[in-house]
Length: 178
Image (cartoon, rainbow, N blue to C red; front, side, top):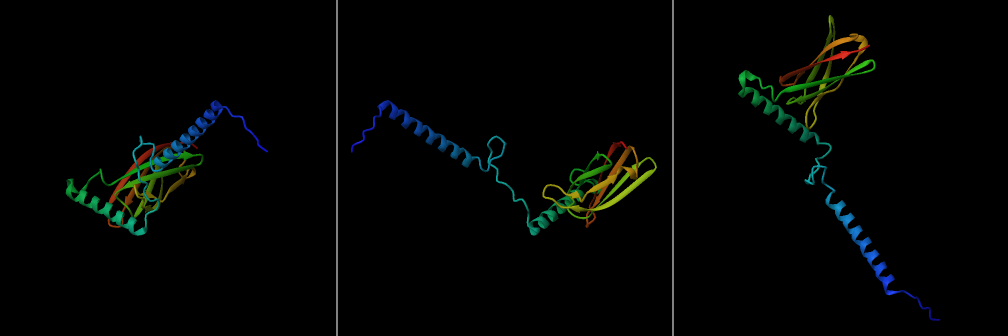
């Protein structure tokens, strides 16, 4: 039993062209994904991702390096003050009945933070640990209930002091509504 299939040459060429295009599209997609695996949205510049978590030895070494750099900077500058290398940036926002204060601390990797908030004659303070991070350190977190000081213009100050006596402070103001 002979079965004879009728295919025109034209139809065979179309099928072959479609298969080649599919294969080419698949190859291009694979190549694109492979080449962009380690690239970010920085115009195709190859970026090697940093490890998400430093080992405690790496973190400690970096912390000591930062603090030593800050000490060297402050000892060689005007009377021990180098505001560029040791600083605290403070931000605050109100969410309903709570004010959250966040910090970014540069050149201090350990120690304590002291938050002092005042609204007219009322004052409130809180203490937290400095938490070391790879880019900057931060205070463990401050959350102040609005009822502690009431509505008004809050003056917010954070003082950070390392275990080896590096110090920095930062401040901000926030209009708080009750």
